[in-house]
Image (cartoon, rainbow, N blue to C red; front, side):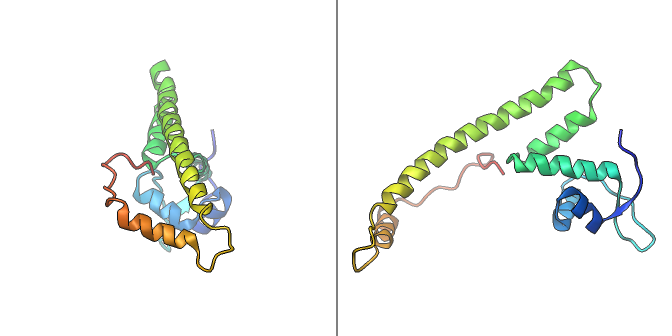
Length: 155
C-alpha cells in the first residue's frame, strides 16, 4: 500500500504523474480523483497514493479508454476484495474497450482507403490540385452527415 504522505502541490503531482495540472483539475471535477486536502494557502495537495491514481488514469487514457471506462475500472479497484465477481468485472470493461478498438480499426481502414483514393487524384503534375477539386465535388454530392447517436462516440 502506498503511503499518504508527503503531500505534493499540483505542479509536483503533475510532474510526478505525467498528467498536466489542467487535466488533474478536470479529473477532480469528473470524480476520478478526490483531493479535498488543501494547504493553509488553499493550494491543492496530493498524496503519493493520489499521484499513483493519476498515473493509473494516464495509463488507461493512453490506451484510449474513455472516462466512463476509467471510472468503471477505478470503481472495480475500490471494491477489490469484494469477491471474484468484482475481480472479473475489469475483464468485462476491457472486453468492451477491445470491441470499441476493433470497430475503430475497421473504421480507420475504410478511412485509409478513402484517403489513399483521394491522394491518388493528384500526382503533382497538373496546374490545379485535383485533391481540392475532388473534395469540393464530394461536398456537393454527399448528403449531410447525421450526427452520431448518443453513446456512439467513444471518448
